[in-house]
Image 1 (cartoon, rainbow, N blue to C red):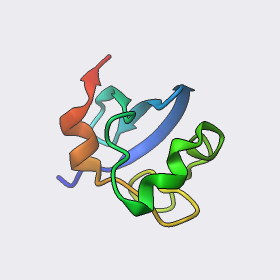
Image 2: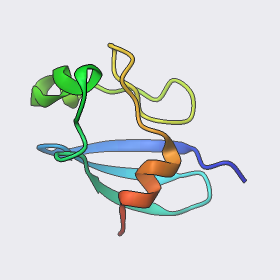
Image 3: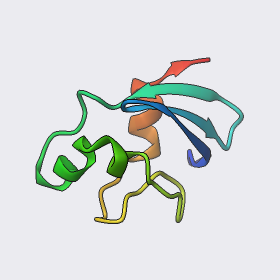
Length: 78
């Protein structure tokens, strides 16, 4: 089964609550994951909180995204 994010909720700072297609709910803190040029705009918390789920993961207007498998791997089960 391919992992997909079905729902994402902004919590605070760089923290998200993610619901995956296989039923797991994870807490993810991306504060230390925003490395590289594409992630620079996400350091602005207002920009960070405006993500979408166009396909199977969270994505921002500038094209920045994280693979669902990566998010699952760094997340903590709720």
